[in-house]
Image 1 (tube, helix red, strand yellow):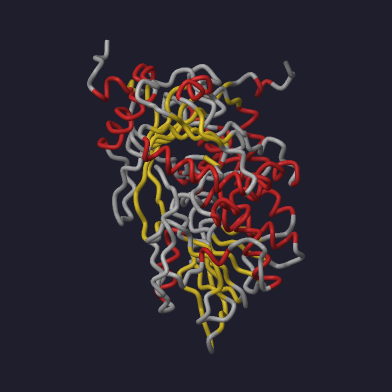
Image 2: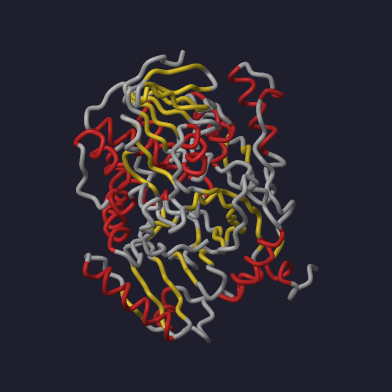
Length: 384
Length: 95
């Protein structure tokens, strides 16, 4: 039986909601409930490209991601789920013209100043990392060996199992229809399985966050865009260890999963839309671009293609923080394709913000009110 | 090799998943086929779940008392069968 009163309601059973619940429990918060309208991870987490990188072009994202990598590296051990491991296989950005190289030199200098060991390497060095690359037009690459990837399925399963053991109520197939507010303060949530009272509500619904906000008269621009991914049959393991990125090839990113299959995508997107049906155009374009980056992929078969949402904001950075108009209401959504990688830092930041009123992490960068003030951030480096 | 015959019964031939692995998850309370799929990778191989999904649905039904019709089968992904990238690009013909 679902509780009718909790102390903390989290809307969204993706990585952001679950990880935040975990950080709250660690801080002694009790009586937490998570509401997920389908199955855990079904929104964006299970559809993501699995990448975790610190190679961003701005201070806030670099700081958040450096911290997130530290947390991703230890989470599995911490929760007694050793199969949850970040693979530090690196991110390799292929660069094809001087202008790109100059931009990445600046990014690398900024990353280095925050302790991220990225560097510019030659095309030949890039090929030593991924021998099957076509480097005939590559003039350099940006490489960071401490970036990597993790399995979103294992991460969600591990966190959910831990949370249940810690007494967190996880409600799947339970849709929050509305957040109830009384006298300017959160009163609870109305779900498809009944009403729940709670003085604190976190909206971690990512693509759907805006629907709940708008019912409260809050306008924070988060729009659902259809992005897609593909997976291939397994090939020899270790052929494509890092995440390989090429903006010249349609914003392509690709890497090998632990089972040997190649997964990835390109930046071809559709929307705003709620339709995530895979498109033939995407399958063809992904094949064209991938086989230019690694020609041998021509002989590798695609076995799966899927769609998912990037919950995009105008500057491709999330909207994270307290909602000033309504006491007890918090938002962490609009991750624009970076929610999985950022989750550990976002969760820690949110939990500190809620329990202590402040966080040491640069959460103000993601201030949900920056849009209405017209203070857009520099667009976060985004592919896929 | 263990004596448990369920360890020798392969439910998913693409990703080498045994009956025991599926039943262990259900015993842990993981009864949603969507979650079983993602934890074990049943249905995510080249056959697109043609062999394993009905078998897994049957196991869930047997162990939880649900009817097979009540179990929502996960989405079938395109392509219907594996297609080489070169064929999609138009450079290669399929044999």
